[in-house]
Length: 353
Ligand SMILES: Nc1ncnc2c1ncn2[C@@H]1O[C@H](COP(=O)(O)OP(=O)(O)O)[C@@H](O)[C@H]1O
Ligand SMILES: [Mg+2]
Image (cartoon, rainbow, N blue to C red):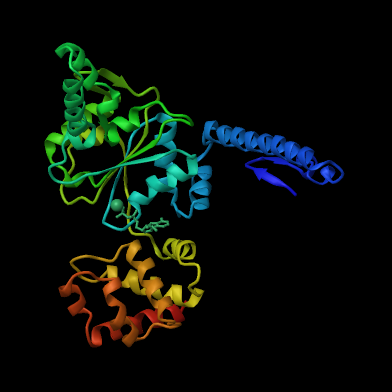
């Protein structure tokens, strides 16, 4: 029996399970409990070591992201490496569904850090992003104090504004000390918020501290690893971009999209995947309102698999087009002979190598 935790191994000798054959029952249990505790400690120590070990190269970033199922190109791995090494926030911009949010999830898995996500939306304010006082609990505490009687106003005030009544939102959560290192903070779809929030964020990201008037200033002991994403429905202000390392996440080329499909829809045959990827890549060159992203490619492949399709044909494309295109105008463009024409061209291209 071999238990492997990262690089170190613990063998059957360590566990000593077989050697307990002639012990009495209590001896077996005691020894098992001791060895289990030793193994747990070993695994914990190795996890800790791997978290502490800095990523040494751009290739290592690519390899470790691949282990989590994320296929990264050289340019993306380079900015991720630099963001980690220099401790700078990483700003990822690109069309919807090209794998921006997934970078943060993959990073958190690869580093063994917690992922804290702040989903942006219009009207997002600091109460939802940083902290809020739990008014309901404060009211109950006031009622209870009144019922008890004899509590002074000042004493009650001090009691009400403590950690017990504080609701932590993602930005504050990301600044708290935690075992295993700073978390990955994902500020997702920043383009959905308004400019005042952007200005507020600029300040929060520059000194990684939050001031709560009643409690004082809370400063992150170690800055979180920050990933910001934008689908570019509007331009994000230059000042914020300047704080960050920037990368435009583009649609993958044929080879990379094949790799992504192998990682995310491994049940698909190589032939079906080639047809799917070639068809999607070809669609992206058409004049569409919303081009299909990688997410749509994966979804489509899964739909085709669920229908037991082994080969692309005009009928199955018509039946499943809703997995690829989400606007009626785009779908209409592909109706009838158009999808057959594209499919014929794609198949001819694939056949000619
Ligand atoms: N490079 C990639 N490697 C692996 N999976 C990817 C990649 N890019 C996109 N995906 C897949 O596409 C889906 C959508 O990606 P997501 O990060 O949500 O897109 P975005 O945030 O850019 O809109 C993810 O669930 C992921 O499975
Ligand atoms: Mg996203």
